[in-house]
Image (tube, rainbow, N blue to C red; front, top):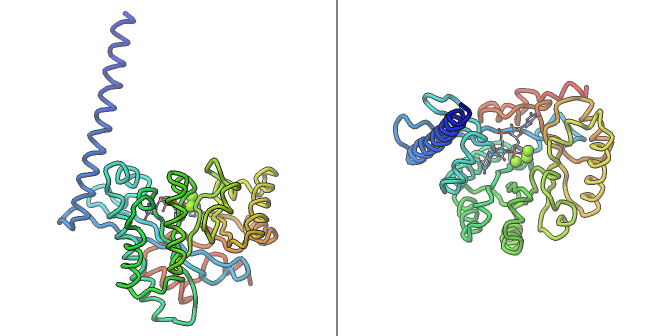
Length: 293
Ligand code: C2E
Ligand code: MG
Ligand code: MG
Ligand code: MG
């Protein structure tokens, strides 16, 4: 009857929740092992996605460091499949620190190869890292260890992260800026507060979320919003980056609207460090290079 059907559904539901929790704790154990450098646990590695000035779309203006987990059985695990678990179980701070350390060391080494160019390296910080009272010391320490000049590093944070503790966030972000480090608001437009907070937070860069960029060519509302954000950002003296640029049409519109930089598959997907160096030196062209010819 219907009674046993309900019971059965409840049982299935409960089991799948339990399985999910089990899977998450397995993942957390494996992540912990990987962080500890245990054999067979796979490595956390950093891929790099370039961004470019819209005025010079053929040259790398910087890279965003994006973490991946090279897992022996699961393959290359994207951040969406392990960063939330890491945040849940308190592993995101050591993971974030490792990404920052690796990206800063790599960046310092590449700058030594071509010291004249002032391209930047952007690293994502989780909300929990922003809540860490030791964040400024940790960043200072990584810069000292790697020799990377502070003005060549940009830290990316979402609005949501900044909203968790607005005063604390503003204080720590200001301390980081005092070091010379740049601060970017990531995924701008997806949070709830947005424009009203732009002038209250010590930030240098606004990254427009891919959701707006992908609708730019056929949605008048998206176009109007992107235009408004770019106008306000430029009035506030902020640098703007469009995320997720995939088509030449989007690139052209963004250039017309006065956006500073673009990032997206049109230029390049996130790539292994060796490939990133080739993009930096010009040994490999960016995808948008042909568009300028
Ligand atoms: P995000 O910081 O907004 O990074 C941009 C994401 O969009 C990346 O996904 C990138 O591969 C993807 N993307 C870039 N261009 C395009 C495009 O043209 N089309 C499409 N469809 N996608 C594009 P990824 O690497 O999977 O990272 C996802 C998110 O994971 C990041 O979003 C960031 O929030 C988080 N994440 C990545 N690395 C780290 C890290 O080291 N620490 C922390 N806390 N979070 C990280
Ligand atoms: Mg980011
Ligand atoms: Mg983003
Ligand atoms: Mg995004």
